[in-house]
Image 1 (cartoon, rainbow, N blue to C red):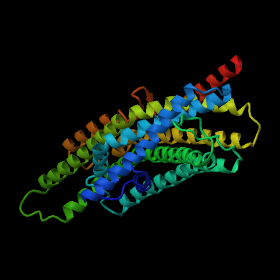
Image 2: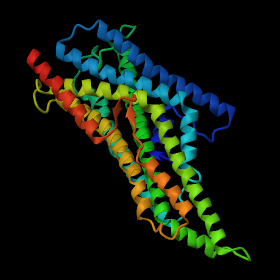
Image 3: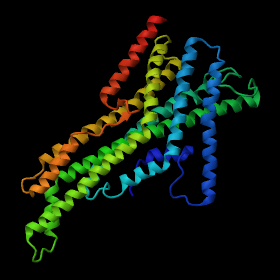
Length: 393
């Protein structure tokens, strides 16, 4: 099995939410479970204490809104961690399906197609991950260089001990920094996992297109290597056509099943993230309009806004790409040299073309389609809410 989404799973393994598949030792299993429990504690406790801190907050409206949209992102991260851990077996099935036959590349040309997508996914992971890491570094570790008074924490969360000074203050400070770093890396891993899975579906569809385009070439290659004997050539050719077509149909169905599984596994969390991102974007822009340029707070919110926009864009772009490629399967079949095929084989190809008229569509909560148009609609909605805030302020 090929290594699928290596960058994503390195992050998941490092932060404690994906035990390596090759670990069979009970001791290693126990140690990683313990490590995962600690990671869960930091992320979930930070979310709970953040809610309590927001309830008892006496800050200004701008500070409260900043705390609110940041807390919403942390709550979304809680859903993402639960989704990955609870759906581990399903994700493993997806990885096996993507890495094994018939999905695995069979020749040099298919390997090139797969490598091009793998490289694009890797670049996407590095760029998005780098942007998030820079943002979280400036908003956490960077606060150490902002002359924050002792007794004041970077984030308004409820801490159940006196942290006004000394060791207890630095303990609370470290707790917040670790929690936010973990949450940011969960977001990096999860978002690149979902977008990466979608792009892998695009890769497999492109491989299927290549196989259909070269159907007659593969057919002639198989026939040239066979020992025909006394059997009629036309009968043998028809049998090979049917077997080859049947394998492609099964592959096409498998891709649809894989896409459906990805959709059902991640759709609800993606919907929650899109809803939260709409709020975050409009509130961030509203707050930025009332801040001095290039201050530490302005830079932090600007970077956070870029992360939100990038997060939604890569999901919408990946979903849009899958839809476009799945629609083009019929074109690849029509462009192949089907005139020399048996009429029954041509009828089978027509059925596949008819099925391809219903493209693969990824949705957010089975409500919003992930596409470029959806991304533009989200920006328009955020801008409308921003205008409403401006008019009521």
